[in-house]
Image 1: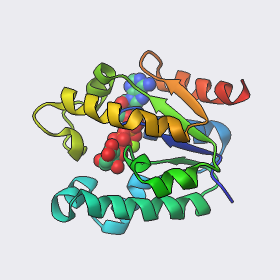
Image 2 (image 1 turned 180 degrees about the vertical axis):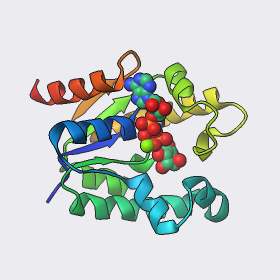
Image 3 (image 1 turned 120 degrees about the vertical axis):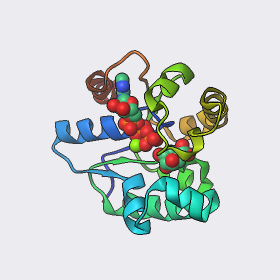
Image 4 (image 1 turned 90 degrees about the horizontal axis):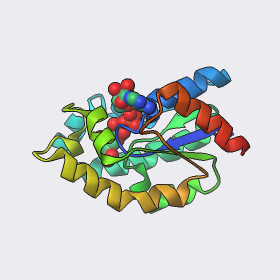
Length: 168
Ligand SMILES: Nc1ncnc2c1ncn2[C@@H]1O[C@H](COP(=O)(O)OP(=O)(O)OP(=O)(O)O)[C@@H](O)[C@H]1O
Ligand SMILES: O=C(O)C1=C[C@@H](O)[C@@H](O)[C@H](O)C1
Ligand SMILES: [Mg+2]
């Protein structure tokens, strides 16, 4: 048992949006590991960061990803920082992994001022987003089997590109 697609990428890349579309298009179930963690913790991600700290969130995330990878047969969206875990990257090597990429300007525009993304809620979201992209690009690419740059595509076009990308 294995997900048909695992979707990774930075905040605002469209992992949740595109994974739902991809799942609907293929008639498969959709699952989002951020939602699994929220259900397990009984509180929003932002509260987990505030109450328990990022390391506690990352530990929960590593476990939630491992569980979803063995349980889920549809489209699985991971949290933006899931690839920071070496154990998770190792687990992803056996899977079809879609990297939805987004540049800084568009990523900041899409994530806006939402306080639900604790890592981007500081005083300089542009600089934070840029640092996050620089640190994580090699990690997303290490695990990806398909990469789609989403900046100038709408979610339906990104979904098409994923399906075509795999056939290419
Ligand atoms: N290709 C796209 N073009 C324009 N807007 C998009 C696109 N993809 C997603 N969006 C919008 O950007 C916002 C963020 O999308 P989404 O929540 O799917 O990102 P995410 O990658 O799941 O982020 P996170 O890592 O925070 O969970 C949403 O408002 C969504 O409607
Ligand atoms: O990019 C990140 O590190 C995060 C992205 C979100 O999906 C959540 O998992 C959380 O806000 C952390
Ligand atoms: Mg999401």
